[in-house]
Image (cartoon, rainbow, N blue to C red; front, side):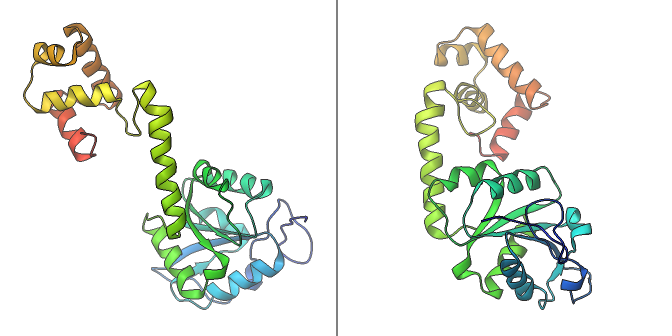
Length: 236
């Protein structure tokens, strides 16, 4: 299937169709979430615009203003290569969060979704007007939305990544390695350099170097600041 992007009856640049001004009947108003729709064909695009344009919470943007959208909705049957290219392009726009409305979500697409920075997924079969608005508002508030089965798979994926890739290298998903976290935890318990060295079986010089590296990397002023940072971010 050839995927095209048009702003009228004439094909335009790119691979997806976004709404033009003629599609958008409702004027902008304060407090609305600005949304750009990217659909792989005219039928999907028309259906999505029809669902959203009547809702007072939503401001649909034409193509010329799509880069300022708070939320970008990508509507597809499946996550193929053209979709991946679009998601990567949207990922470079730090002002927008991307949601995926998809007909069939293959299990292998989960990793792709993570790599492309997708913040929310909704299956098209469940994409009624209220769910779409909930998705958009949640994303605008910095939240993520996933179907329950995909959330379970995501948690399994993260657990497997930690167990098979990070643990053998002494790394974690946080900004601290396992060694760094352990040393800062000991600092939080009142241990000095000599005590940390004894408990971790490292030299005092290594302990000082590790703590200095953490402070430099995270721009922390001292050990107390490092402990506070780690506790606030749930790293220890």
